[in-house]
Image (cartoon, rainbow, N blue to C red; front, top):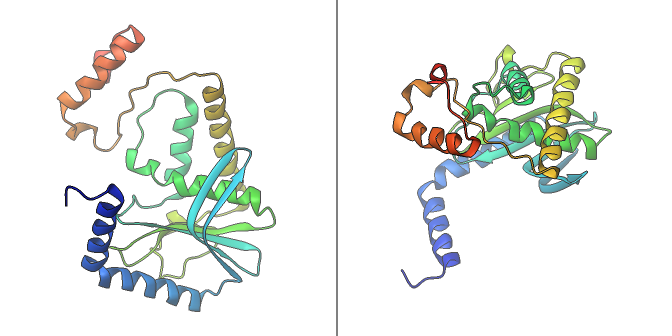
Length: 231
């Protein structure tokens, strides 16, 4: 097996994964079919690459509805942090602030779909967001946020997952716009400052030696020290 090409090794691993988790994958596909039968789409788009102003993205599934709204579903083999409108809003504020605040690292994964939805809204300007969600083969419901209400047979519910008004959605999109412009400006100006971010949830359980490596790198990179208060 050591003489196989990397592509062949990947194929073997893929086939092994499919065989091992076949029933789980079938259940996932059943959920999608039942969701489509319950909440019918005008058009289903699979893995559509989109680009606007040099921003690119691709989601696994887009559902367009005849009331000019859309859903985005992205598939992950593992679970994701629970979606929350407030969590997204606070995370964007911290990333924009530039104050190097503690952030939730798992919550960063949620921004992938939020950013894709932002880009999609520019391409499909006549459509508005209905919902966006992650789906894992190993969970039985979609994990997302919505501007309407969730069909609870398919989505994990909760009021914290509802974008209550168009103003709230516009505010999130405006913050994304600010964050993207800030990031693009930093890239264009080759401004890559070294930052030590700490996870607001799990920092107490992190291995001190693991952090000391990054603290040392920061010290020599910035030619400065780190306050004891940050330890």
